[in-house]
Image 1 (cartoon, rainbow, N blue to C red):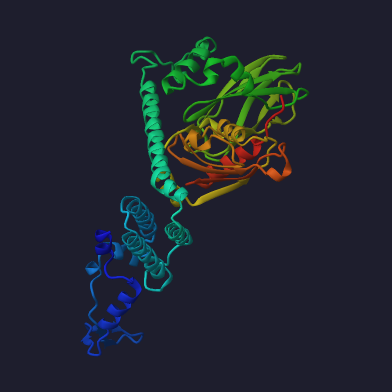
Image 2 (image 1 turned 60 degrees about the vertical axis):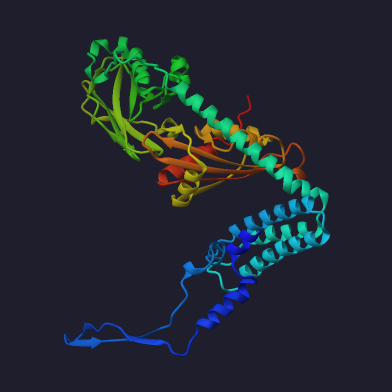
Length: 478
C-alpha cells in the first residue's frame, strides 16, 4: 500500500494538480522575441516579420510519480487494474488482521485511492477522459469493499486466480498442439530427385498419356497432395467441367478448368456436330479481372462429327473473382459465306482455389484489422439452426481458419463471436469476424442470425470473399 501511495503521489490527485497549476501561474512571464523571418510579398518586395512569444515555466511531466503520469496521460486501464489489485489487497488484509480499527482504516484508504482515480477521470485534467468500462470496473470494486461479502471475497481471491491459471494452461496446450502439427507438416512428402513433368516440354503425341501424371506431379511439387481433389481425381474432374455451348449448336464445347498455383489450364473439348468440314476453327478467349491469356490457341480443322482438345493457359495475378469469356469462330469448307461464330458461356474462376487457411497471433490480427481499409459486411441468411454448425459450415466454404480457441466456443449461451483468418497464395491476408446469435424468443427451430465482417487490403479480396459467403450460407438439403 505504501508503494502504491508513493507511485500516486499526494491525494486527492485533482486538488493537488490544481494547486500545482495555480502555483505555476506567475505574473512575471518571460517575454522573448522570436527569430526574424524574411518574406516575399505579391509585389516581389522583401518584408521582415518578427513575433513576441511569452513563455512561462512549466513543471516537467517527468517529475510526476509513475502511476499519476499514466493517469494524467489518459491511460485509465491502469486505474482499473489498480482498483482490482487494491480490492484483493484489502480483502486479504481483512482476513489476516483481526483488529477492526486497522481493517477499516486499510479498506478506507483503498477506497479513497479508487475514488480519487474516478474523480480525476471525470475532470478535465487528463489528456483523455476515463472510459465507461473503467468507471464500471472501479465502481464494482468500491461496492465489493463497502459490502465485504464472503461470496465476493471468494471470487476475487480464489476464482479469479483459478480462471487465470486455467486460461494459461489452455493456451500452453494450444501452443504445444500447434507445434506438434507444424512438426508433422515438415515431413518429406516429395523426394528431392523426383521428376516433374512440364507441359510445355512434353511432345504433343505424349499429351494424352502424360496428362494425369502431369497433374499429379504438379500437385506434388506444390505440396498439395493432401487435397481431396488429388485423392479422387475423377470426381474432381467431373465437378470442374463447364459446358460452354448448347447441345444443338453446330459446334459443341465444354471445358475442364484446372487451377494450378499461379495459372489456370483450360482443356476445351470441341465437337463438330455438322456434316461439313470446319476449317480454321479457332478458340478466341478474353478475360475480366486480374487474369491474362498467355498464348492464343492455334486454329484447327475439324472433319464431320470429329472432335479435338484445345488447351489454353491463363495467368493469375491476384486473389479476385475472374471471368473468362469468348467464342469459337470457323469457316465451312466450300461455303462462300462469312466466318461463323458460336458464343461461349462465361467461365467463373473460384476465389477458393487461391485461399489457404493460415494462423496469426491475436496482436497481429488486431493490427491488421485496424490497418486494412476495405470492409465488407455480410448479413447472415441461412437455414442452419445451430451456431457451431454454422461456423463450421463457413470455415469449410471459405477455406479460413478459426483463431478463437475451441474451448472458448464450446457450450451454448445463445450467441457466438469468432475470428477467422486466411492467406492467399499471393501473400494477401483476409480477416473475418463472425458475430452470430440464436434468437431464443423465436423458438428452438429458429435459424441463426447475425453478421460477418470481412476485412482485406484489396477491394477485390473483400468483395469476392463476401460473395462466396453469400452464395454458400445456406445448407444444401441432401
